[in-house]
Image (cartoon, rainbow, N blue to C red):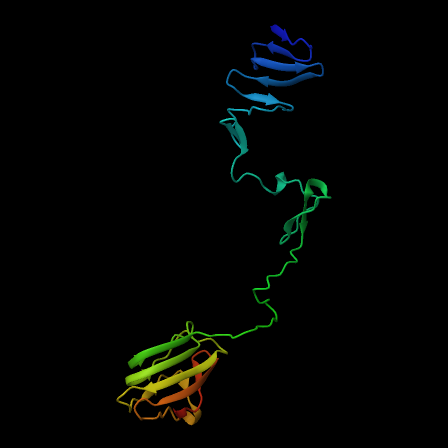
Length: 230
């Protein structure tokens, strides 16, 4: 075994020829070792102006810089002043241990309505389907639109939809084209007062308005048409 001591006698390097090629020692005993394979271990490390190189795993070192690898810091590796609770957020608290504290999220976003209650201000617009060419079988898409403005270019049958939602309501406006006398028949999901069906204004370019309400799956109630708006 060979020994090399510094002038201050605080550090002794031993080549033991066994597991470790170089052993670092201080007056208090062994503080680290370096193997021929380049594996460095130490009880502590301090220094400036240089970075450890050849590190692998969660801490890497290269090009004069040491860094923690991506996607390895988890909750257990954070220094937080209290135990976590599901749903809590991490907050900065300079007076607490580690400067971090788990806390309930008390913030609210004023741009969004709460799940319960809330007030809307300004105009509230719903989606309206404005279709200028309707003839034959027509299926209304209630999941995309609340209201419908349909220009009749031929006789129309409103086919049974599959997209309506219970409680949904709105209107259907029927506009006769330049020819007029277009009729609207109904699929079985559409119901009218006394099962009378829809009788619309036959005049060319006339506009009629029909309200609707979805009361159950496959049940869309149509109100009496308001005729001949002008």
